[in-house]
Image 1 (cartoon, rainbow, N blue to C red):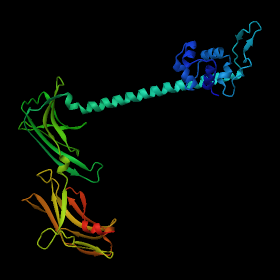
Image 2: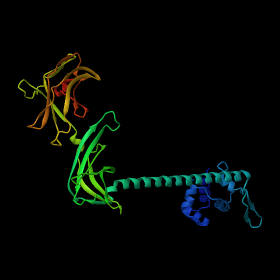
Image 3: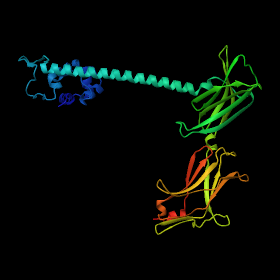
Length: 383
């Protein structure tokens, strides 16, 4: 039996509730409950008091292999006197019990020291986290904490263009050209720079004063869909900072994204809707007809990205079975869209379900875009 089980059995034998036993020991009912559930071990003083109340030795309470004494026999350490059967008690601590208590105390000490170290470590990590959060919050509010003036410029301009280099770690960046003319100009007493902010990120670049009293600057930042530009002026003497708002630009990434669709045309140039351009039967596929690519930009009136080279590719996995150059993409000013055309006439000894027909388009930044050419009539019939 465990120590908790022995305490519970002896308490019931005495007809005591947990609350009554706790009162005798000057403890709460919860403390007794934890002992009996083996969630806690009584202190040495409490063990001695329990042994006195229950008439058993401390050794009996602590050692799992020590059974409770027979009710008819006086327990070890209990002496019965002939005069009125008065009971006197002398607690007995055997050598084994002492070793057990010393080992238990060592375990408790190790546990306490471990908890202290863990708490100290947690507090250290929490402090590091608070420092990092403070740094992030400080970065996020760099511009907001200073004076922001929204109508302090007589004119400004923000020009940007994407830079794409597949060999760089950050392959897509924005090259910015900035200019701003303050209504109040004090170049002798103010240090100028441009500040670009996107969410919690900030970048700065030098602001050079031109002869027309405007500041200009050029820099490059990672591609961001939205950012805000300020002309930051710092007073040389007081250190006071003024942020003159140029504007917030948004939807940048969409302006550099080509949108695409296609259709097969008949001899009259009308849409071919019967699915006859692609046929597949008896394990063979034929692609034959006039194909039109259409490029548009639904988010902007200006094409920042446009098609330069268009191909049609029929492939199986990574292997090109057939390919052809489409016509040069031409811009239609009437509807503001680019068009390219091609007329494939291919037959391959492969089932259509094993193949992929792809429009491959290279834009003016060197990016290669791919769109799959479907034929839903065939795809519905292919098992």
